[in-house]
Length: 312
Image (tube, rainbow, N blue to C red; front, side, top):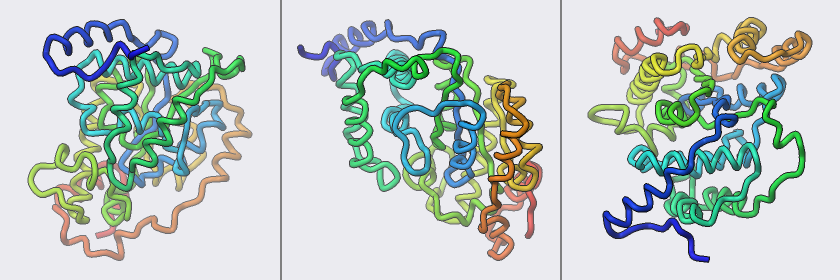
């Protein structure tokens, strides 16, 4: 059968499709995921690796960095910020049904899925990765496991870029809890991971030059952090800013704070074991050996005010 939803060539067709899509709304029981994001290289992978110890399931196809590739396919693209509300709602509904219920994508939404896989997004999310995620969804079979379908099991996903679309996600997942992982911006300025700045959001978050330089990397880190602080007005106590450096220095206390934020019952022995597993990265404090005179003093002051050690 021909899909009921297809790309349209006229405004009348487009309007008709959007009316049709209005039936797709995230179910109330699926509106409370736990989501992890941050500037790439901030330590989101470590945090994602800890969540199963809290009893949180991270379903779906993941890459080696534990990024959810279904979310990457559907949402990590520039055009997502320009989509009509009806399409975003349908995409969020589709994603929640895949994640929570292993539910096959309805025929009328298949063209939306194909559209999401159409364009290469650079080395960070190339065509092969997109096609793998697409095929994973298309081959999905409904699960008969009660665990997979349990509405009591905490669930979520990790995708660093999700912080850019946080206000949008909050509209469709109004009970979401969001963990923004922040690592010292001066160390991040000298990270090899500049994918967000280079391929996705640099010109959206920065004015003027957004070429990949340590100076602009720090500017991007500051802009992203300030934007998330602004999102506090939307999410309130459903937004937790996790200081990665503090997690490495005082893992027990930071994990206790995370447990309090998530409101999950976690055995103290499990927390202790998780704390013992955390190792400080060798790149910690790398900015102290670099030329920091290139940075704007206001950006350095912001890093310091955000609670990070500044060695300049």
